[in-house]
Length: 482
Figure 1 (cartoon, one colour):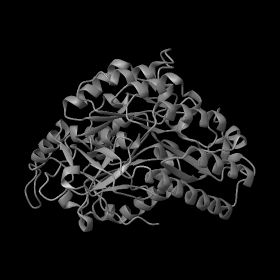
Figure 2: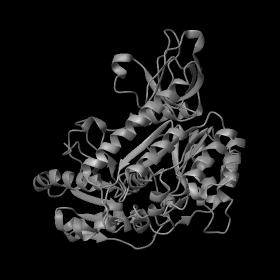
Figure 3: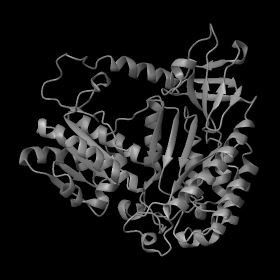
Figure 4: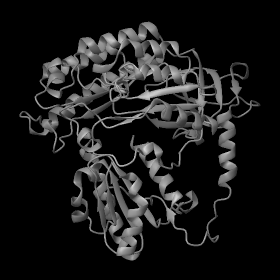
C-alpha cells in the first residue's frame, strides 16, 4: 500500500513540474526529499528520525531544499515531527496525499513549515496522477482503510474505516494499465476479501476476480492481503476458475494459538485457518501460500508459541514474513499486562525462522524438475554479475534466478520464459536450462519496457542544462543508522 502511495506522490510532484532525480546523479542531493512512512513497527520511527538527523546538516548548507514527511507515521506523530526535526518543511497524513504539491508551494512562499493532517479521506488516491515504478506490472487499490480492531495494529486509526471503490472504476484502471503494456496487476486492500461491504455486496471480491479474467491481455492477477475471518468459498472458486488469477495466496496467520488470536481480536481460530488452506489446496493443488506471523505478543506462553510452531508445520508455507511483536502506542495491546522480555521473544523468533526456513526449502525442493513460466523482472540477484543469471517470478510468485543458454535470445523485463527448475534454495529457485529446455515469449510488457527505455534517453545527462524553472525530486543516498 505504501509503495503504491509513493507512486501517487511521485506522479503528483512530476505533474506539478518536478523532475525525478536521474540515477546518474545519485550522489547529489535532491531539491525536494519526500519520506513516505510506515508505522506498523517501531523500527520505522527510528529510520525516519535517523534519516532526518542526517539531513539536518545538508539542510543547513542548502536552506532552499525542501523536506516533506507523509504517510502513517506522519498521521500518528503529527506535530511531534516538527518538534523533533524543525528543519522539516511539510508534514501530511494518509488522507491527503494529494495536498503535497500545494503544501510544498505554501511552505516555500510563507517560509515556514506546513502541517496538514486530515481525519478522513480527502480524495481517493487512485484518482491522483501516478508514476508507476514498473511498466509491466502495477498495483491497483480496490479499497483503503480497515474495519477490524486487531489489538496489535495501529493501521485502522491511521488509515481510517474501509472505503471501497466501485467495480467499474477498478476495472477501468486495470484496463488502462493493460493498454499501457502491463500484463500483471496486484489488487490492494487492507482486507481485500471484505471488499464490497460498504456497498452491500459480500460476494463482490470474487466477482471482481472473475471480471479480471475477462480483460484481454491481462495475464497475471494477484491480491493482498485477505483476512481469514472473511475468506469465503466463493473466492476460492473464483481463484480456481479464473485462469489469469495466479496460484498464490498470502494469508496472514499472526499466531497459531487460539488464546493469542482471541487476545489479538483476530476473530478466527487455527482450525478455521487450516481449513481454508485445505480448501485452497484441494482446488488449486500447486498454490504457494505465504503468511505473516507475530512472535512474542503480550501474554504468549511457551505453550502458545508451540501452537504457532505446530500450525506452521501443518501449513507448509512457501515463505513467511515473521515479526517480533512491536509495542505501538495507541493500540490496546500496548496496555496489556505480561509484555514479554526481549530475550524470550528473540529466542522464539529464532526457533520460528529456523522452522520456516526448513519448510520453505522442503517445499521448494518439490519444484525441482518442474517446468515453470517466469515473468522477467528488472531486478537481478546480488550475485548476478558473478552468475550471469537474470531473475523473475513464477506464476506462484516464487523467485527464480535463471541463465540464458548460449545463442538463445535474451529476454527483456516483462517477457516470459519457460524453463525447468534445476536447483533449489530456501528463498529462491534456480534454472540453468539447456537450449532445448529454454523457451522465450516476447510480450507486450517487454515492448512497453523497450519504449520506456527509449523515452528515458531524453533525461538530461550530468552537466547538461535542465528545463528552466524545474527542480529535481528524489531521495539522496543516506547512511542509515542501524
